[in-house]
Length: 373
Image (cartoon, rainbow, N blue to C red; front, side, top):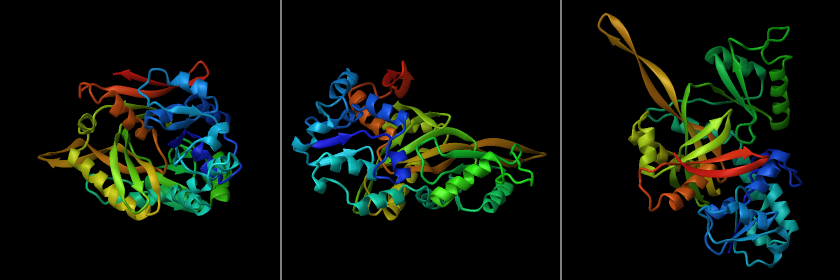
């Protein structure tokens, strides 16, 4: 039996680095409302942990879920658990399971958890980006800064920047800096005595640095999902076509891999996408040699203008490039969830049929919805 755990507060817990961590209210509610989610990728006979098993069973509804047992913490000591598969491993989850009497042999060691936290630093995404941005048809740079002068030099060079806390949950821990609209302090400094300057100093004090990237003209979000075996092997799982609102996850397109490739080929060549997937497997194996489990790499299609000389004039044409590593999520992602649902929803359906999977917040509840497009 595999015990599955949906702990969406993982990113925040990882940022804290604390074993005794209390998730913010929104994280706790998402945890409770969507506790059934692992049943979408579990196998028949597995168990899914939930604060309220009956509620989790009801909320799974008629979705294409496995025949799992929903259990609460009081049952963990008695279950014949052979393996634990959480959304993501962090010190808080390990401490919780230890308190419930789970066999220590099933849990990662402190050194393993420390390694996951270290690799979850956005520095890993910067290192992977340095490798991937060498491929034709790609663009992207990232920098790690601990002094405001470094950021101000990058602002002068690039004009618009995004600043990222090294550890933060998806869509959070970001700030934007625009040379044309920046708020300056009395000394004319964008990162002096200003709200953004104070945020920068607080992040550096807490996490030692801030990651800085030029802003790109995003056209479309997408990602690639992978599985690492812990021995240096990385396998590509599939594409994730997703939408965000204000930086936060909104929903995924559910379709066959061929259909998703076709959608992306409106912007970039399919061969470039396939080459990129293979390159991630190669370079991620070098960067994550001891990590075992799912991970995702967020990417985006960006617009670029290219001047092409023509007789008596200069023709400006639109082209698209791939930013190949916006984020590395060292955990299961909603893209992995979408891939699991695709197997259940589209396996016997019309290969051209598209669905959308999204998370709505209505009537003070988070709900997973799967609808045809």
